[in-house]
Length: 356
Image 1 (spheres, rainbow, N blue to C red):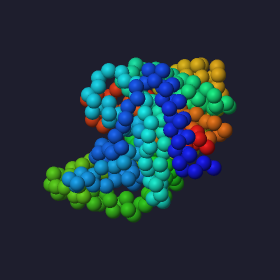
Image 2: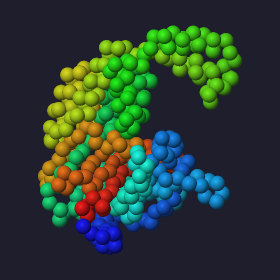
Image 3: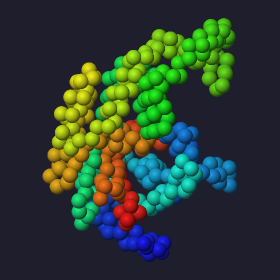
């Protein structure tokens, strides 16, 4: 077991090797800010995100946070530097998060990001990581696609508001599981409460619609009620949809079997395959290049814990432990303040895990 000083020295030595390799591949090293404006984080992920970040106020009273993620820090730098062209960044540093029990977790990461690139550049980043890890044997590569999950949800016979919930809260595992339970059992549908709400709705209609209650205009509250009335949740369909989602999230197959497995799954449950086929093209393209040298798998629930991923995601394992992960985050740049949505893909190596 290395002592803290030797461990720090070892991590620095390893990082020099990777940064040298990333530079050779055309990635420019950037020194990222340790502090992030908390408002930027909450814009991206809401107040819930603050529970896992270390926040405090500066001398002016502005709330700031220690960076919880180096991808977000890289995206902010791209925006602050007013870049408009493709940038290939590499970085090394620590990220800070709080666990559910409030314990500080420090991640020493080294990674690279490809921002404002052409579509289909995922292979460049993934191959960069795999080649830099060449001396480590018995690697496994896992691929996934958040877009395939979204296609599944869009194909289900559910109220639109429930489709939005299941997509929006997909990364929040505990709350997501609660949503699935509600779909399965309808335990939250209390007829007495429903009747009370409908009676209350009639009372609200008699009040000025511009009046604000609990931060919302009465007209907005009425509109939400009306949507529920027109698009109610069905007991049988809800339970059926919950089972389909749970079964989908268990899928894990060799990457070359992905198309057959998913098409059969969607067809079996009478789901639309048009969007699925389009999404599968990316998986097939990546697998055709990666599987020549590495064991490659598809995992349907991969990447769900990262709130800003939008498409292809990947994970690299050594001895059955994840040492690197990354993915596509095409919406993040605009959310953080960039003038438009642009393509972005990147990932990082967990140096602590690699050292172990």
